[in-house]
Picture 1 (tube, one colour):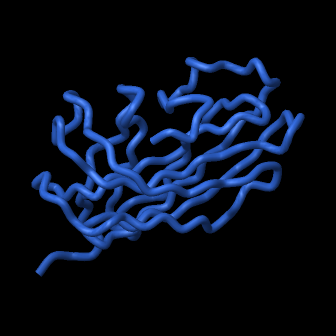
Picture 2 (cartoon, one colour; picture 1 turned 90 degrees about the vertical axis):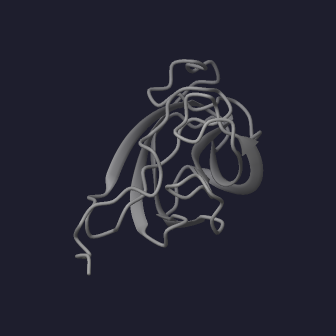
Length: 159
């Protein structure tokens, strides 16, 4: 019998490489993992992908679709949740695998600059839940397009 506090990872650590698949979330038991906080810079009024979670199990086989639940929505923008299919990058722990994904995108209110924040719970393919808080710095319409700290794909709702 395993302890509910024993940390395990259902997915690889955050991947910040590859424009199609970064960033992924590290998902583990809610009790074993403190809430993760990330920072992200975005352009005002532009859509940006914040989270993408595949349905791959630890052994790279397909599992149930991950679930994203927004527990604290942004105050100065809107979220879009999409499901899709992608091929994992060669650098991922399960290289070149076709995976179904759940993704979460953010778009600030038109003309808004300042800070915003989103908190999301992720239920991975193993059934474990993790929490991630994403602190957003929203700049002018010419905010960094390639300079995100976590390597997220910019200015698009494409998966």
